[in-house]
Amino acid sequence: MRLRNSTQTFHVLVTCFSTISGWCSDAPKPLLQAHAHNDYEHKRPLLDTLDHGFCSFEADIHLVNGQLLVAHNRSEVKTNRTLQSLYLDPLRERIHKNGGRVYAAGPECTLLIDLKSDWHSTYPILRKLLEQYSDILSTFRGDTKQTNAIMAIITGNRAREMFAGESVRYAAYDGELIDLDSTASPALIPWISSNWAQTFRWRGSGTMAESEKRELQEIVRKAHDKGRRVRFWGGPDTSPFWRQLLAENVDLVNTDNLDGLEQFLKNL
Image (cartoon, rainbow, N blue to C red):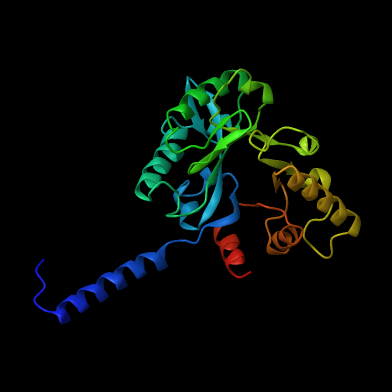
């Protein structure tokens, strides 16, 4: 396009700036504390979660006839809902469009993969699959991590021994409370997950007992001292509960309520 004069040049620049500003204002703000529990149960798996700015999302998988199918229960699997089609492929496409990140110039995000079938048969298939997406996944060599757009973490029916003999890993391990005192590197166990209801009685109503606050603070302290993050599941999905978690420095808020948590975090 040939510009006839300086006035026309000015108007073109203003138009371009306005367009870019519009794109920026429409882009969701990455929410580091937001974890989408059972993300695949939303109308648009992964996509709805990313539209809300979540930086962590969870997929349950079953090994069925050699395929890794996403569903909570084995009876609910569908052959067209694979880990690749719902998560890995759309993530790769988005990351390449955004210059190497899930959110343009954004942080590393987390894909939590919950093994619902036996790891002995499931993990070898999963590892081969993840290797095909090494261009977008953070990788691990011993205690050394090479950060990329996505860190895969394995939870559910898992064991640390499934990584035995690997010189390169394409996933990390979801620790439990028994791992709080582990000397394992955060490159192996980057975070600790636990069922809230199995440890605490408080359900988000009224004041949390001081004894339970101290116990929660000790869990967080131990995890942070080892360079790990903390996530609880099975707790109330309410703003008073979220507020208490964040007040005690819990790193990730587990939710099924994408709209509610996004607005809550934006209003802090």
